[in-house]
Length: 551
Image 1 (tube, rainbow, N blue to C red):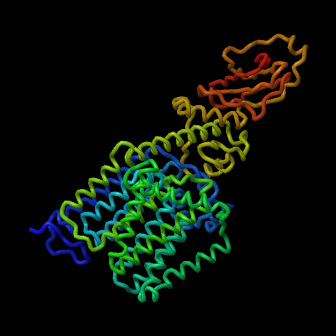
Image 2 (cartoon, rainbow, N blue to C red):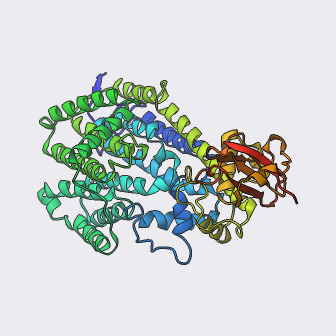
């Protein structure tokens, strides 16, 4: 029996063995297991989570009457298709149906795995193709694209690009051309990554005579995109810091290469990237013309993506950002697959590739640990936002300023007025009840306290100057700084300003007000009555005394 086999072709052998590296049944069974495991893991890891960061601005500002047009850019991106999927699901399931919102992201990850398998199978056989899909779907450092539903926009662009390359591998037809054009529209209308994808597909078409006859499939979608950009587009890209942008792009590519092998640090990623570039440069001169054209197209996607992202994001996002890793991982893997075109694949090679994929995922500080760490981070962030939402509801919408940022450190730009309007429009409520706040960890309770104090739950009033007469008055001290229902008067000492801090549910103190109280002045703190019997407590640095106010 021969120990080698040719890479799989479109026409598989009629009777492939179970472990035949070209088209063995084991690899297709393995793909099903990989896809099912990926879906189950994504749903499992996102249990108990709620919305993340700028998703809050989407649900509060991009829906309902008076919302901006869906054509308005979101973080400079055209995200029409993301909103077209996300907002109806939000309306259908409500604010508590997080699992429903995960369905598009899960489906896109599974589609990505299947498409990578399909493309790689034609070059290196089904066995290695399963390993390629495993490297992409086990890339835990790209955790945002596995755990945040709003990342479906970027994933739509990635999957559309990979799907377009899969179509280019098949015979040309009118239906295939229309599908290619549709995929370019999907890529452009989902995220800014659509531009590199469109350029890469355009390069592949332009480099062949037959492809040049099909250039309309990129020209027509690009023309539509230009119309949108003239009407709505924004751009913060700048060319004034090109050296920093170039360094950012190189570092981001290093992190993507490191993510493939499960390395968090930049040095192993840089070594891996350099090795990959050497291999790719060597193989470029040894593959056929079709392989060189595909390598050029994939290189254009990566160069354009990192270049455009660097000049627009180098000053606001670290190059290790999780959301940027999937792009590098996927298209670097496709370049390696293309470089292996024409190799003979021995029967043991697929097992080695799968073992390497599993090691990169399961080793200490590998992809699995990155996913667990990400879940811990997102769960903590979710709990903190839930506690802050419960705090503003405890006070009531009539008392809370509509422009109050509810939890600026965990949910930037989420304002109280927009949040209450969202509660009126959608089912469900992710905010914690008082009992849940009291049972939460200390850091979560501190977030509730911070929101309560900033929202005016402990109303601050001027107390006037501290004179000899006021100091001569009797002061009924409050044990432990506990604020009674009628409030307290806090008097600063005569020689230094005073900072007042408060807490209610948590152990950590939060600042009352922004500026310190000048020396020789006083303030009054009056707790607003609400649905919780838990009292506030106050402390003051530089205070002469904290006195109970008369009823």
